[in-house]
Image 1 (tube, chains in turn purple, green, yellow, orange):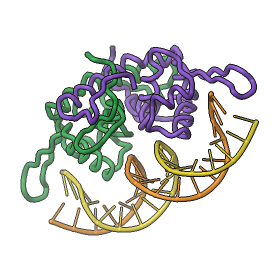
Image 2 (cartoon, rainbow over the protein chains, first blue to last red; image 1 turned 120 degrees about the horizontal axis):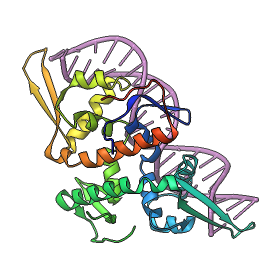
Image 3 (cartoon, rainbow over the protein chains, first blue to last red; image 1 turned 90 degrees about the vertical axis):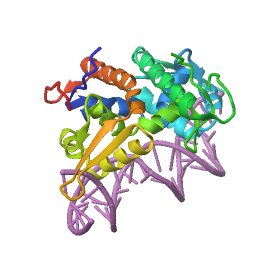
Length: 128
Length: 128
DNA sequence: CGGTATCCCCCAAGATACTG
DNA sequence: CAGTATCTTGGGGGATACCG
C-alpha cells in the first residue's frame, strides 16, 4: 500500500486535482456520499430503504448524491419494472467495493472519537 | 476495530450528527483539511511551508481551515517571537495523529484510482 | 512573516410541491 | 415508488488588498 500522496496534477474524467487526496475527497467526500456508501456496503438497497435509514437527508439530496456516485462509477442503479410502481435498486460496483476498507477505517475512527470525546444523544449502536 | 457505524444522533462539542461517518466528514472532510493533515503527517511545518507545498490553496482558505482543525483539536499552533517577522509552526496533536492511519488509507485508495483509471498530467510522485 | 478584511460567486443542501 | 421542479439559503472557497 503506497501511502505517499501522488501529486503534481492528477486527472480523472477530465477533472484535475492537485493530489490524490483531493481526488478522493471529491469522489466520496461531502456530507452524504460516504454515508450512502456505508449503507450499501453489505447489501443492495432500494431508494426508499435508503431514505428510511437515512432519516435526516432529503429526497432531493439523496437522489443527487446517488447520481453523482453512479456517474463516478461507485454505485450501480438497476431498474425493475416499466410502469409505476417501479423498483430501483442501488448497489456498490466492483469499484465501489474497493472503497469499503477505507470506509471502515473512517467509521472506526469516528466511533473512537465519539467514545473518547463525544456523547451518544440517544444511546444506540445499530445500522443507520 | 469496530466498523459498525454508531448512529442515533451522536454529539461532539455541541454539534449533532446523524452518525459517526457524518461526524468524521465534518472534522476532516471538505476540500483541504485532509490535504493539510497529510502535509503535517511526518513533521511540523510553518505557515509559509504549507503554502508553498499546497500551491493551489489561497492564504485565506489555508488560514481558515487551519483554524478549524485547531479548534477541533487535530492541529496545534505554536508561535515563536513577538514582533514581525514571527514564526508560526503547525503540527498534529496526539488526537490528530490518531487520524494518520485513516489518512493513509484514503491516500492509498486515491493513488490506486489514478493508476487504474486516471492520468498523471505531469508525471510526479513526491510529497506535495 | 503570517496572517485579516472585504467582497463576491457558486453550489451543496434544505423545504416544499408536484409527477411518470 | 422513485423520483423532479422550483425556490431559497448558508457557507465553502476564491481574489485582492491591506495590516501588526
